[in-house]
Structure formats: C-alpha cells, structure tokens
Amino acid sequence: MTPTSLLTHLECASCGRAHDAGLPHNLCACGGPLLARYDLDRARRRLEPAALAAREPTIWRWAELLPPVHPQRRVGFGEGMTPLLRLPRLGERYGVATLLLKDDAGLPTGSFKARGAAVGVARALELGIGRLAMPTNGNAGAAWAAYAARAGVRLLVAMPAAAPAINRLECAIAGATVRLVDGHIGDAGAVIAAAVAADGWFDAGTLREPYRIEGTKTIGLELMEQLGWSLPEVIVCPTGGGVALIGIDKALTEAARLGWLRGPPPRLVAVQAAGCAPIVRAFERGERSVTPWERPSTVAFGISVPKPLGDFLVLDAIARTGGCAVAVDDAELLAAQSECARLEGLFACPEGAAGLAAVRRLRASGWIRAGERVVALNTGTGLKYPDSAAAPAAAGGAGA
Ligand SMILES: [Zn+2]
Image (cartoon, rainbow, N blue to C red; front, side, top):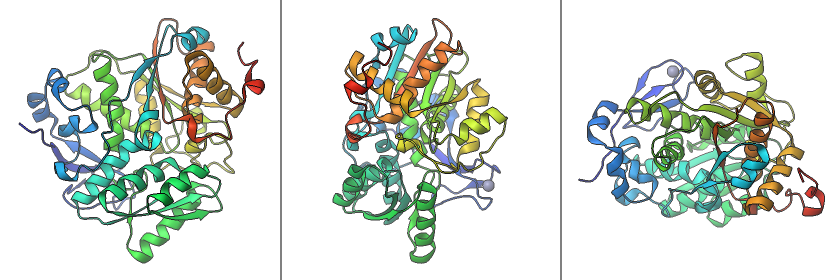
C-alpha cells in the first residue's frame, strides 16, 4: 500500500485556531505561524518504525507525517537520509565520548535547506501556487531556486548583497529573479512583503508558509531512525530563523506521541553567532520573544537573523526540553571549522562549525556532562564559503 499523508489541518502556533490545510495559507489572522497537524492516533496504528526500513531512502519515506503531495509532484533529486557520522577525534579533543554529526552537506544544493524546499515547493505545486517569493540569507534561496526550476514554478528572492556570491549565482542560474538588498535579511523581508502586496507573489518565507518546517522535520525523524529510536542527551542546532531546531523539536514531539520514543527528550541547544544572538539574549533574560538585534555581523551568514518569526517556538522548545541557547564568536567557530577539517576530514560550513564550537564550550563549562551523547548538525558544506575559512597558518595553533 502506498503510504499517504495523515495531515488533518493547520494550527496557529500562537492562538491555536484551526485552518483548512486544503487551501494556501500564510500567517494566521493573529500574525502567528501555522503548523501542520496530523492524525497521530491513526499513524500509530498504521505506521510501524520497523516497516520504514523497506521504504525508499528519501524524505518521502515519512509520507504519513508530511503534507499530501501526489508522487508525480514530488519534484526533487533523491534528497534525504544523510549520514550520521561519528567524530571520535574531535569528540576526544572536546571531552565528549560520543559526538555525532548529522551531516546535511551532501544534500542537493549543499545545505539542509533542500529538505524544506523539497516539501515546500512540492506542496505549493499541489495547491496550484505558481509564483513563490522569499527573503533569504543565501542557501534557502539556492535550494528553493533549484526545486522551483524542477517544478516549473517561478521564484523571486531578495537577498542581502553581502550574502555568499555562490548563493546569488545558484539562484540566478536556476532562473530565479534575484533582488539584492543593502541590509540584512529583515530588510530583504520588507522587499518581499512589498512584492507580495503589489504583484500577488506567494510569500514562502520561513514560517510564512507551513510546509518548509515539515520538510526540515525529516532531520529529526532520520536521526531517530538512525539511532534505533534511542535518543542522545543533547542535540545542538545552529539557529538563525530557527527552522532546524523547530523542525527537530516537532519530529521529537510527534515521535513521542506515536510511542516511538522512551525516556526524556534530548536537551535542545540553539547556537547563534555572537554578532547576531537575539535568541541567546532573550533566553538569558528569560523572555519568550526576542528584541531585534542591531547591526548583525558574523561570518556565519546563514544564522544571521535579527528578528526570527519563530523566536517563541525556539525559546519554548529550549525551555520545555531543559536546553539552552549559546553564542560563539567568529574566532571560535572558525577554529572549530578548522579543527573539524583537520581531525575528521570534514569541512563544515561556518554555521555547522558554530554548533561544534558550542559543544566545546558547553562541555568545558560542565553543561554537557561526562558520558552524555551529543548530536550536532552540519547544515551545509564548507565549500560554499571559501573566503571566510581560516587558512591553516592562521588556525594552526587552535587547540593544538
Ligand atoms: Zn492565530
């Protein structure tokens, strides 16, 4: 039997109002983002974790827990089931006996953004939406451009002029319309809002449509399957717009309700760059939403988001799981990037390296305890950032 979606409705994460999932939606009338809800009781009866092994190793193996998309509209490149790697040498250096890395660098377009784009674009096609628009720091735009091209859907992106040049090229070569913005991603968001209002583009920005999160959720589902449904104590997520952490949290929550998990959830850690750390600041103040970060500046461009729409979802997930939020500066994350490449042969992106730097710091402070298992997330390939990586001569002393 072909697995089919058990999506029932969309629910506002702020006010709880239900929305018809059969229609295109952006935000709730109250301004809150909409989250996909499923018939999990039915999923529990219908879906055995053991049965998953026989399915194709792509994100669509989780069809029951994704929005309905006709197989012919599942436009993609075979994305999903990325490796969960052991980092024994880096773990030894950091004092973490079991350090694992969910490595999304090998996904189409080289970042985890492919997951959200694969589901978001396919679902847009299913709903008859032919023109998508979004602000991006680069990798999301690159991913959505590729999937939009494959689906025959038009895409408009607005991107800070300071974003990596390769991302601009990736968008342009796939036929997306690219508007460069002199400012940060919040300024790019204003450009998109104007285009949506004036020209009828559909806003596909982070959490402004409900299905990017669902695609991203597959990181958490894969992780659990790869670990045999036995979870680590800590999961570390590079956090800008928060889509990775929110998606992983949603996967863990749904899996727990399906009875697939035992014991307490992993403590979720949001990692930000010290040059743009609104989530960390709000966490330290005990606040549930962020105040916009002034003048963001970091080489970890992908997590430079001064005012994420999903701030409260990230902060709630951290609080609920007993996690934390931590900022690392550029020198620390570049040192971690270099160390990971030297000790493990893995050239992580700056955002992924920020997560590794956070592991080092949290273990040194005792927040990660001896013997705890830690999963970090490499959100993309370091190959896209040739200009920021520290040359061996400059980083040779780091930790040596
Ligand atoms: Zn609402």
